[in-house]
Length: 131
Image: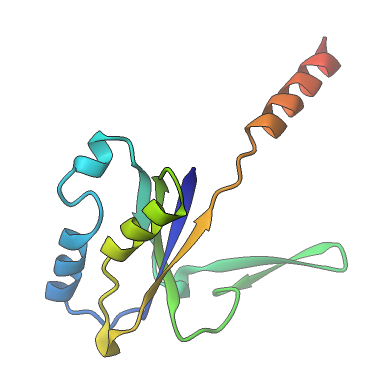
């Protein structure tokens, strides 16, 4: 099962040395998770000041600058990891460093929905419409 690991931390609080330490300790630091296919994606995000939010109000899209909500911690990046079960995902989550001042930061682990059957049905439906 695939899991998304959402990395929450405090923006702009790490020194370059702390950032390098975190990156070195993150999954794929030694490459084994990439070689075995466990790690399927990972990207850091730009700061929240670069975010744009699209909301739907009364059936119309409303575009605003900034993140969706004000929080103490910000979403800093993500990993997508293919694990046999939640227990294995938790073990991987424990390996992801979230170093910031005050020892705060967390990893939210969420299963990714399998929509392959939906995609197959949609593709078949679209093919039938164009036939």
